[in-house]
Each structure stands twice: as C-alpha cells, then as structure tokens.
Image (cartoon, rainbow, N blue to C red; front, side, top):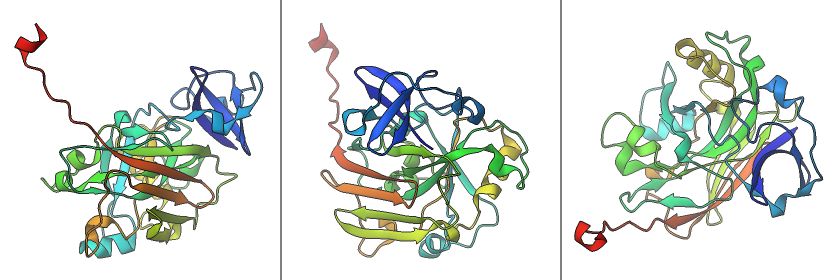
Length: 284
C-alpha cells in the first residue's frame, strides 16, 4: 500500500494512493503517532477518490515525535570525506519544522552560502518499542519514504557537532508517499540525485554500512521509538561539498531525489527573502 498526508479543499487527510488517484480515509488527519501499523490497516474510505494532481502533498509524516539522521553510512561517502569507517552509526537530529512536502520549494536562507543536497531512504516506524533486537527490528517498520537531507555546509562545519547545518526550517523535503514493506524492496534500491538534469549521486541501498535492522536496534537502545518516528538512513557519495569544483544549490535550481520503488521528490530551490527589522519608532 501507498499512503500520503494531503490537503484538499482546505482539509487535511490521510489518503491511500491508487495510481493517479488518492482515496481519503476516515480517522486521524495525518500519518504519525496516531497511526501505528495496526490502526492504519483498519482505516476505511470516506468519500470518493480525487486526482493526486488536485491535492497538495504534505510531508508524509508532518509532525514526527523524533527525526533521527545517520551520517557517513555509505562506503563511497565515507571515502570522499577522507574519514575512517565508522564502527557505530553517526547520529544527529532534525525537527519537524525542517520538513516540507514532496513538491514544495526548498528555502535557501540568506545566511548560508554552501547549501548541499543528500538523497536518502527513510524508515518510518509503525510500532513502538525500546531496546528492540536486530532480529525483531523490521516488525517495527511501518514503511519507507524519501528525503533530501539538505545541508548548510558552512554552518555544519562551524563546530564538530552538525545540528546547526542540518536543522534549518523548511529545508528537508519528505515524501511523496509512505510505501509499506510488502510493496517496497529496499534491500538494493537505487538512490539518486539529479540537479538541473545532471546526475550527481547514484548508488543503491545494498551499500549501506549499517543496515535498517541495525539502525532500528541502535536507536531504540537509548530512546523509545514511537509510531511516526523517522530514521534517515544516510546519503551516498557525490555530495556537492566534496566535488571538485564544489556544487551547491542556488535560487531557481531543480533537485530530483529518487529511491527506486519508493518515490521521487521534485523540488525547486527558492531564495528566502530576508526580513528587515522595522525600527520601533516606525511601528508607533
């Protein structure tokens, strides 16, 4: 099955996708904490289907409780950074405010000059658990989606912690659909980024250093995973910062990130207009 969170005629709904149509489902208004796997499976159609082209797709999970991101999780990406192979997953976080929909603009902040792309397969949790064994990990997976882990490199490398480069508002496309495991084989799914028609990343998920069961088990050691939580599994080699010459995103660019069998994100890059503070005297 393929599911979306969408808006149509001013109403937010969960929908089940069938080709070019989306069928609204009665129940919670969005995918997330209130839609574990056992609940999602019971949601029934409400009203008639509408064309996907006529709805606005939101981040597939608009308000996850937690977003975990994995750095340096493809051999080629580790190689291009010149780092040693990690023996434990490199983890950082994003916030729900970082997420945008599958066709929304990526906001280019005026403060950052080195804005980079990162194609990633995303795991969506469907069953709560703590200290989940590697063997049981896939039982806790609701499905998969796609993210572009847009990164402000000049901010990322201000310190040895990455948060300030990874968690900008309205920077991370997520979607377009949640694809259940019975429909998506992610054991060797192609992962790619195409910028303005030029392929810059091309790999597949068989080259992950830490696989999905390992990531679920590792994260759940230190925190309870909840339905709707996201794990961005890492990006392949070919990021713009490590190219010679370097490649960064600019106003008007089109970025296409795809994971085979899961989905495709197509986003324009738009410069954010900096807000000029209004002097107090002028407001009176």
